[in-house]
Amino acid sequence: MQKLNIRMTKENALAAGLELFSKKGYSNVGLTEILEKAEIPKGSFYHHFKSKEAFAIQVLEGYSNCGLAVCQDVLLKKSELTPKERIQSYYKDRAEEFEQKQFEKGCLLGDSCSEGGVSNEFKTFVEEQLEKWEATIEQCLEEGKANNQISKEIDTRMMASVILNGWEGAIFRMKSSKNRQPLDDFIQILDLLL
Image (cartoon, rainbow, N blue to C red):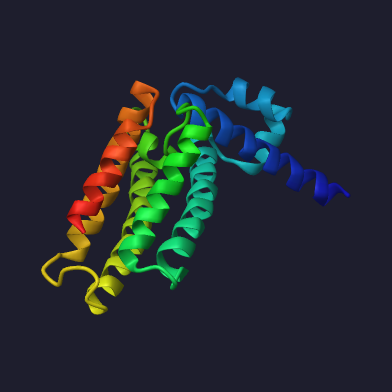
C-alpha cells in the first residue's frame, strides 16, 4: 500500500506539472503552485525530485514520449497511406487537437526552448527530445524517397528540420492569434514542399 501511495504521489506531481507548465510555462510556475495542484507536501516532492528543474525534465520526458509514440504510429506505421499523406494526416490531426483545446496550449517542448534561467542540462534535454521527433519525420521522408513518392532531390534531414521548425513556429503564432490559421497555412505549404 505504501508503494502505491508513493507512486501516486509522484504521478500526481507529474500530472500537475504537465498541466501547469503547459498553461503557464516553466518559469511562470512556482514550487508552491505545483505542491498545491498536486496536493502533496514539499517533503514528498523532494523525495521524488532533487529540484524543480529535475522535476520539469521528468514532466517533459513523459510529455515527449507520449507525443512521440503518437507521431511514430502515424508517420511510421500507417502503411495504408503514403509517407506524404501520413505527414499531412499527422499535422491535420494535431491542428484539430489544438482547436479543441481552444488554442490555449502549444507544444511543451517548443515552449521550453524559449525558457530563460534554465541550466545547460535542461536545454540539452529539450534539444535531444526535439531531435527524436525530427528523426521520426526524417525516417518517414526516407521511406517516401525510397518508394519514389517524395522527390529524390530532397535532403530528408534538412526537410525534417524545416518541417519541425515550421510547425513549432506555426504553434507560436496560433497561440498568439487564438486561431488555427497559422497551422492551416503550414499544412498547405507542407503540401507544396513535399
